[in-house]
Structures are given as structure tokens and as C-alpha cells.
Image 1 (spheres, rainbow, N blue to C red):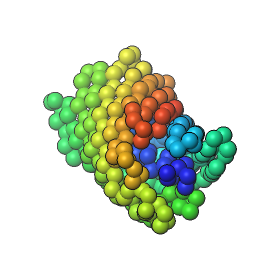
Image 2: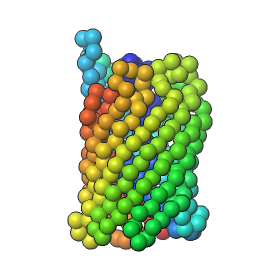
Image 3: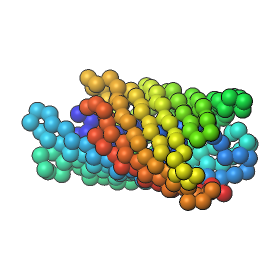
Image 4: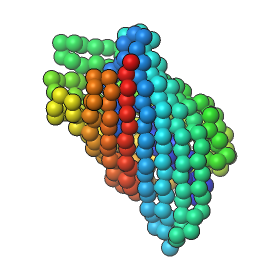
Amino acid sequence: MIKRISPIILALLWSVPAFAAHPLMTDDTGTQGKGKFQFEYNGEYSTDNEHEAGIAEKETNGTLTAALTYGIIDNVDIIVGLPWQWGSLSQNGNLVSNDNGIGDTSVEVKWRFFECKEHEVSLALKPKLIVPTGDAQRGLGNGNISEGVLLIATKEWEHRAVHGNVGYTHNSYSVAQDNAILKQDIWHASVAAEVHMTERLRSVADISIDSNNERAPDPNRFFVLGGLIYSVTDTFDLDLGVKAGLNHAETDKTILAGLTARF
């Protein structure tokens, strides 16, 4: 199993660097506007338990990600994100690995290329580059530049919205062992919904299917997510969410929390 190589590399690869309205994984078509910034600071903590061939494995992973978005023009943003990762793996109660460090940097551009204000429907395209700033030998990154693209659709109503994503990522690994065990071509599809419960509080839900990064019997990973976003002010949000895996390939449980500031 790849977990015996590094528990952190899975946390890096299994997260989709879309920088959606946290805690959602599904992105929306919204942009910041020309000359405006958004700063996000998000954290995740996940646990996963497995039993195989008489071995009980427990994996814990954590991620802190800082992301800065800048509006180049009204319908085009550039987003840069840098994660700090840590993780540990125990087998039958014995610590096997324990690592932490900076992961790979993601650089994304969101372009909202279609907008129908009458029906409140919009489409956006989001290409990305993953730059190898993490230590691949320790499982903290790919070691090579990787790339991908995400197609985003949003439909809005007065107090609710629905978002859909379809994406593809090509991972390029510098470590031979990773190339032998991990897939390079990853597909993603997800749908999310937002409901304004009050003027300041939104409830959110997300369901996603992704290609399994491992060359394993389970071809895909499924999860559901639920959470809340509270707008302290018009420019400052706090959020909290829980993500649950729906099959063996997905991490059992993840707690997500974050803050977003716009200026």
C-alpha cells in the first residue's frame, strides 16, 4: 500500500486545490473584481483506519493552506496557494512514519467566460500549475511540475446556489516508486449547494467523485461534505465543515475550518 511509503503524499494528492468557498471542495464562478484581493487561511485534519492482512493501520494527516487571490480584471483572478502538511502512520499501534513540511505550491487562473444575468447562470475555466516546492523524497510533493484544468458552472437564485465542477489533473512524479504506485491522470466531478439560512449564515453541502490516485482495486473515491459559512462582516467569513468518505478508497473523516478576508 502507498501509505507505507508516506501518509502525507496522499493528503497532498487527494486534496483538490480549487480554493472554493471553504469548506466546499466544489468551486464557484465568482471572481474578486479588478484590483481586489482575497486571503484564505484554511485547515484540515483527517483520520483513516484500515485493516489488511492482519495489520491495523491508523493514519492522521493535517494541512494548513494559505491562499491569496488577486483580481486581474473583473472576470479573471489569479490564485496562489501554499500548504503546510503533516502526517503520521501507525501499524498495530507502532509508529511507522511521522513527517511534516511545506508542500507543493499551486498557481491557478479563474476565467469566467460566460455569464447570463437574466437566468443567473455562469461558466468559468480554471487552469492550474502545481510547482514542486515540497520535498518529494519525503512524500511532501510530486517533485515535478504538474498541471490541470477545471470547468465550473454556477446557477444562482435569491437565497441559494448550485455549483458543478468537472476537472482533470496530470501528476508528474520525480520519485520512481511513486510513478510505479500512483496514477498520473486524475479526473474529478462534483456538485455543491449553498442555502442562505440568515443574512449572515449559509449552509453548504458537497458530493464528489475522483479517480483513485493509487493503482488499487478501488477505481474511484467518493465523499460527502456538510458545513456552515458565517459572514462576520461583508468582507470577513469563518467556516466549519465535516467531510466523510463513502468508500474504502476515500479518507474516513476530515474536519475543515477556515477564514476568508476580502480587501
